[in-house]
Length: 318
Image 1 (spheres, helix red, strand yellow):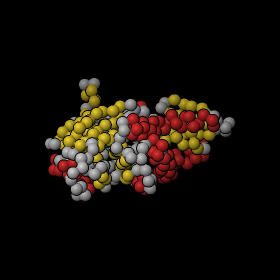
Image 2 (cartoon, rainbow, N blue to C red):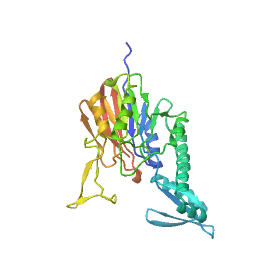
Image 3 (cartoon, rainbow, N blue to C red):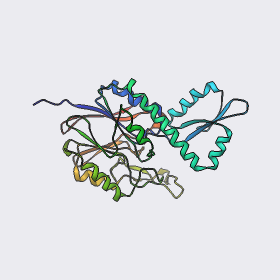
Image 4 (cartoon, rainbow, N blue to C red):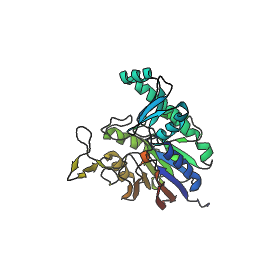
């Protein structure tokens, strides 16, 4: 009988458009000599930063509370700075800016166009940064618009994970789901707990060996400590009592039910940026690396698994 080698992978999530974090994530493949890179959703940014051309030929923009006046030659460096923080730069005329302010559907179409372009650029970085023997498993998350799925599927350098069970190696499988239970933000991929439970059951049904399986579910299990998020008032502002934010469980009861029922080897989660950590639910080690994408910081877990054992679980921050 041939003895299978340990498998080493890095797990990250919630990049929200930060190109700097994405580059660090890809670079880790060589640095840690990885067998796989695994990411669970929320890859794309949410906010467009207009770079508006003026009559004098210069451009003006407002970013993170600061106003900029740029020459055409300065735009690439400014755009890079914007992308690294997870925002989406877009050069436009004053007329185009006025049209966008007057028509939310045009804003939506522009968002989709820019997201596709950004994901294409990101995926194009993989061949030069990730060795061929390192698998790249990508799943969109609840904040990612459905339009990016076809872009990911069409890339030969990645494995599309959503609603699929992917072979991590000859022994371990990764079951992927980026959908979440309802959020205050009405994101593109959220649904009721009942529907999410059905989704998860259909995915887990594809798993051949639960004992060595990895569940890569974007939303963490409910009331698990790695799902604590600020309580929000009616205006979506954090509730503060006695000078402290009130934190409440925001994970999924369906995810918790599935983990308790099937007890896989490992649960990979994200979604709640503030709740980095790991916890056991029965025999299953569940983890959330958290996210500091707006600071350009990669937060991840380096994981090494061997048969039905977790040999290494190390937080990575860079």
